[in-house]
Every structure is written in structure tokens, then in C-alpha cells.
Length: 192
Image (cartoon, rainbow, N blue to C red):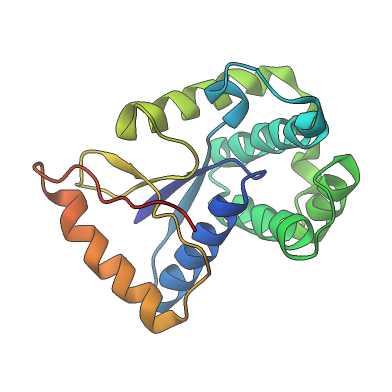
């Protein structure tokens, strides 16, 4: 894999960053591994009632993402996230069981859909989350990006809009050397 992207499907910032990474992967022929990062775990299960349904649906999707990863189906996991994000973040359909079912169908992963409701995948989600958090934390959220030989991950990059291909590649090409420098820690500014 050329990049590992740890994500929680409920996060709109993560969605934008994932579309950036997809554009970079297509332009550069990179292989992306899609892994679970749980905002529910990060927030120790303290979820406001208005987000409960979306977070529950997200948790189900993360089980399926880790089940697909265990089978080496990285492209299927990426396609699932694409279908889910297009419905929830782009089209504004609330993240819930109906949206998840439609995304599973459209992504062509119905054969693996039982994992959505199999609690045995919760441990794989926790392990994936722990790996991401250990590589980039503390004080991070979704997404976390790791690349081989960097030795660590980063939270982000957080982007406000999905850039065109040229700008997407500029971000990627600027970020890689920083990731590989042991002395580099963080670039940050307030969100707008």
C-alpha cells in the first residue's frame, strides 16, 4: 500500500480529505488502504443525542470496513466509503441504516454485509483506531494518514474544499517530505 487512510465516515472534514486522496491516488497510481478510526471511541462513547443515529451507523460501517480489509478488499472498502459519502455528505441524506444499506448495495459488497451487525469486528475497529491514534496522537481526530517509511501518521490534511488535481498533487508532494522528517511535528491554523 502507498497510503493508509484511517477515517470515520460521519466526519465531513474527513470526507473532503478522502476525495483529495482519491484524486491523488488516481493521478499517481497509488494504492490506498482504508481503515477504521472511530470518533465514538475517541470521545469515549460520549455522543450527543442528536448524533446518536449517525454515530451508530458509522460504527456499523467501520465493522464492514475492517471485515473487507481482513479479506484484502481495499478497493471495495474505498468504494463503500465513496458511495456512503456521496449519499450522506454530498447529497445530504442523513447517515443511518437506510443510507448504509444503499451504499453497501451500490458498492457491490452485499456478500460482506453481515459484518455490519457482527460485534466480533468491534475488536478490529478498536485495534485500527489504536494504531491510527498511536501513530499521530494525542489530540487528534479523523482522518489519520500514514505512508510507508514515514514511521508515523498525521491527522489530516484537513481541507475546506476538495482541490483540483493540480493543487491536490501540490499538497501531496509538499506533505510527503514533511512526514518523513523526524523533526517535523505540526502545521496548523484555525478552521474557517
